[in-house]
Image (cartoon, rainbow, N blue to C red; front, side, top):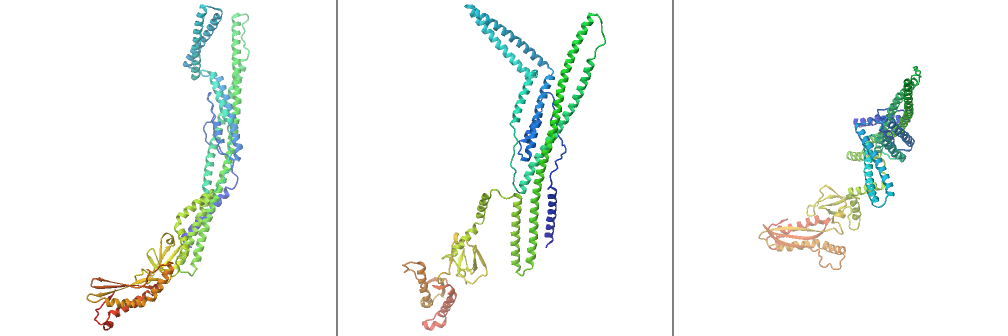
Length: 618
């Protein structure tokens, strides 16, 4: 085994061991304990402004896709956040009632204007009532006069009422209308309560998707959700700490008020006897003291209610932080399970790679011991390695992306793609059936395909192999080259088969006579010799052609030799065309050339009765 192969195998083994260790570490139950994270102030109540961030955070988390295991904690978080929102609105209303804001100069001016408008409305109403009573008793011209005055008074009343309404709106916008602010808070609380009642936890079915890509996406979503839960938990803990601080400060204030109340209720030791002025002052002092004690009692009562509210809010925020902690534990468990599944996929990939490397090394060692030819060994080695790599890549892709869900669609697309990619092979396979038919070709036939001529030495389902012999006008000896064609030529193109029936073909004999010699005796002699040599073959060729053509009228078809004479530079050319069998072509041509040389040589000069000049066969 080569060094690079050993290094790759060792690396895969190390990664596989690390993955198995990760699987062991992630197989247990998640640790549900959590430390508090950083947060912002989510529970601060300053003045009448109601902070509803706790409710909106819980609502947003509850509306996220949630599994059945998370449903209970999501509903608990939503319920606790709704209770905290109710307490926040109650505290805001009490704050408005107990500590009305200081009136600015603008608010005082608006109040004065409003008071004036209200007084005008009251005067107008009294005037309208008076005129209405007088009008009921009047008659004649006085009644008409009272009608006019009554209409005028009613118009003035409407104008003054509009001013009152406008003043109230201005006072509300400026923050001076306490009742309007309380009413706005109540309306806002009612709207938010309606939203809370219509909020439901969205439960989804567990996703059974497979593949490393799916596991990574699922882990990413769970991680994002866990970070949001950590943030919400931190905000709840910060709010609980803030409310606890306010609660302690308010408890100290109540203790101080109790101590001051005891001191104020102690009797005074100064008596003035029968002094009337002193008695009057004592009476006034006693009234002031009673009013102060009443105000102090009311303040203590309000503070006690606020203290109870803070206590409830601290408890709610603490419970909410605990619910978020449980929720975080559930999400962390799901993350751990997702990581475990991902590590299983990585382990499977590493096992596939390891098996591939080991199998590749085993094949290499087996092929190294064989006695086959080196080229065959290299070919087999390449084929097995590529096949092994393709199979390994397919299995690894299945692990990464998971099995396809739309199997029919994928198979259809894959089939269409393979049809386009393997179009030549498919057409070649169909062409093989054509070549196997009646008008096809067989092993040993002499054919011409796409301008290449040769003998068929191999006829497979996809390819046809020729042993090239060159053109028929050449020597016709094999060139030693094997030419391979895809069988698609049988459908998309054409081919010539010279081996049908008797394998007849036309050949040509050319002889050049020098200038000054009479060509006709030579022409007659050559034509006679060619006719004697080819008469039997021409007769058989005509019969076979008539059978192949399947025609009743073949009188114009003739296989008799034809001779042409034409002048050329340096003499006269005699061309004789004749029919011959393909396998007898060279022997017959050599025989006819020999006869032509004898006719042109001195051996036949005496027989012909005239001197014959030397001629050169072409």
